Image 1 (cartoon, rainbow, N blue to C red):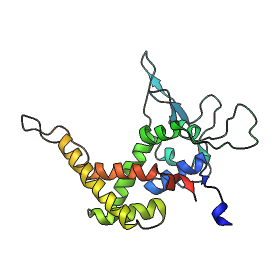
Image 2: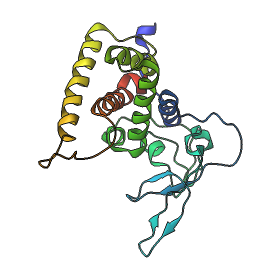
Image 3: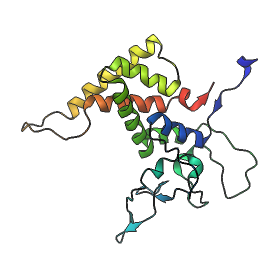
Image 4: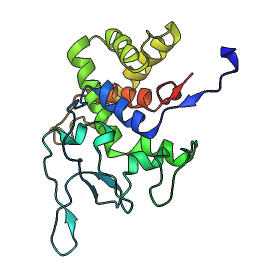
Length: 214
């Protein structure tokens, strides 16, 4: 009867925890006070200490010493400030009694995975982990990425497509970061290869195979 079982999406908290685990940044500390939440410059609720400065009340970045990467069960729950990452993936609404968790598939979830600073940061951390453990060889990086994200090796066509994607993205990033007319570089930061790998990691973390149990 397994072929009749419907595909099951991960709960909001499990998605966030899985992102942290795969990227290698999950803080497994147990117990203690909740991790605070605050609005960011865009008005979204994110993990962080709520401190502002100036007349326009801009949020101040305060280091949480790794506490921001704790499991979602330790994130502060405030009815007026639902964490954007969890709220997008149907975390229970706290204004009313919640007898059953809802499950939806909507465009805002894809937008969160594409544009969220949290997801982009985890994709970069995932890429850094792969570079550290697999070295500079793109083929080995692809294999490790699939093993960490999907717990399986990539199929031949997936490996071929991933390597093509990495080569194309690296060329685009190299062109963007190339020297200006005066001969000086446009900017300093991650290498084109690292940026391309981070792009691939974001694709993997946003895929149905990562978000659903089949």
